[in-house]
Amino acid sequence: MTLVVWVAFIAFILLMLALDLGVFHRKSEAISTTEALRWTGLCALLALAFNVVVYFLYEQRWAGFVPHSNLSGQEAALQFFTGWLLEQSLSLDNVFVIALIFSYFKISREYQHRVLFWGILGALIMRGAMIALGAALMESLAWIHYAFGALLIYAAIKIVSVEEESLNPEHNMLFRIARRILPVSPKLDGENFVTTHNGRWAVTPLFLVLLIVESTDVLFAIDSIPAVFAITEDPFIVFTSNIFAILNLRSLYFALAALMDKFAYLKMGLVVILVFVGVKMGLTHHIEFPTILTFIVVVGALGIAIGLSLLNTNGKRPSAD
Image (cartoon, rainbow, N blue to C red; front, side, top):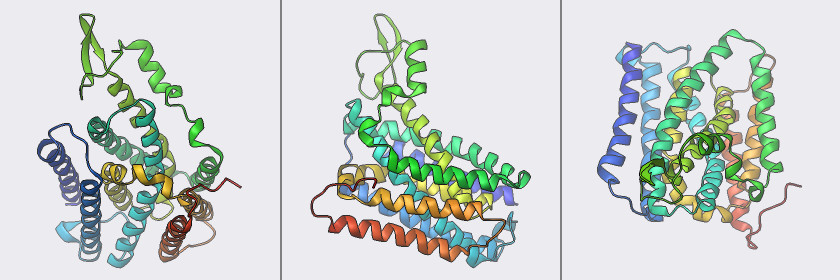
């Protein structure tokens, strides 16, 4: 019966995506900040509601669910909420990069939603595969905890050492390969990914942007998936918390992309979180960190970073030093 729960969850996510593109956003139009905030709030409420479902799945074994780990309902719910909050906070860095990509290629807001929709659909599939691989590695290789811990600390160092202005989307390997092997139209054709140019089919620049967004998410997943494994090794909690965070990425982008410069210290908060979960992962075999401590660190780092940003009156971002 555990399979039924997995299938029901995936069917629910696919239904949400179908309603999004097929009912609410059938036409290409710019999404306002107000609408994006409403969708962000709705996605957050759905995650909180599912947190209650997680509690009863692990506590009461709803629908004959047999969990991978012997967690109580309270501990499972806390791990899900902490994992979701962690993934949601790390996805904010993804928002920075997506905004840069759209700005670089001059993609108007009315076409950005379509790119993000298909980008997120691809991200769901890729993250599912990467989580399955991560879970298998965690079970079979004892030393993988040290590797994941080092990877997370490296990700923190990368955040403070790489300037946004130095990022060039055209250096993306997938972008360069696509440019070499595919005929590319020199201009956009509305929201279409494929068009005709000089009497033959060709992909549009919008398709190339989609490839860059997809490959960028893979790079972020390499950091974020080990981060959530530092909180829990239960595949169901890892997968569902990841998916709810990704589901909210699109609306979060439209809500915050224009305001990112206001959050001057947000990246510093993400660095603190990544270093903490990296150390936690590396010390898994030596020290037990309670989930509540991880929750406090994540909430505290985000809260302090946002608070300092709001107090930052000059609007300048702090230096890496």
